[in-house]
Image 1 (cartoon, rainbow, N blue to C red):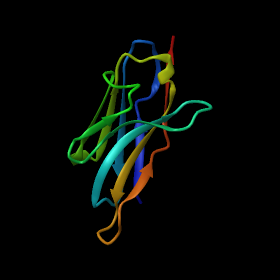
Image 2 (cartoon, rainbow, N blue to C red):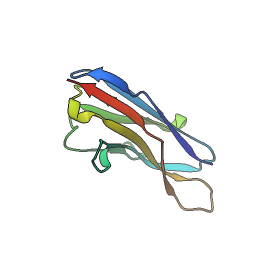
Image 3 (cartoon, rainbow, N blue to C red):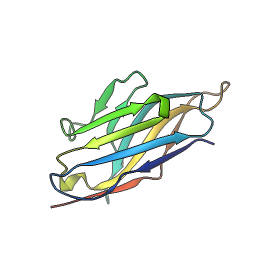
Image 4 (spheres, one colour):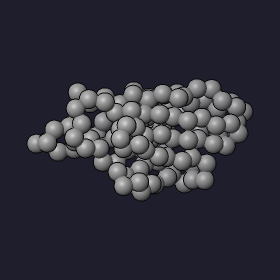
Length: 121
């Protein structure tokens, strides 16, 4: 069974940095796009950044220039380096990956349980 495990969240002051990690485990044939989403209290989940298996990245306008997404295909891991953090970045951050679990199956989207990032002013 495929699982995504996030780590790296925590409390940081405005202007600080955090690095999030997400590792996929289980029966995996192929991982396509991986990404990070976030959900602040009382708001809908929103895209933060995605990266394809070939390394092409996409960012939400609100994090461009401050966040960097990267992945290690050999380790089935995706990272999110967050710099110049702002209080409005406070949210639960979720890892997402489009994974083919079996040779005979199509890819499915999987989600981690989330990691809380709190940015104090």
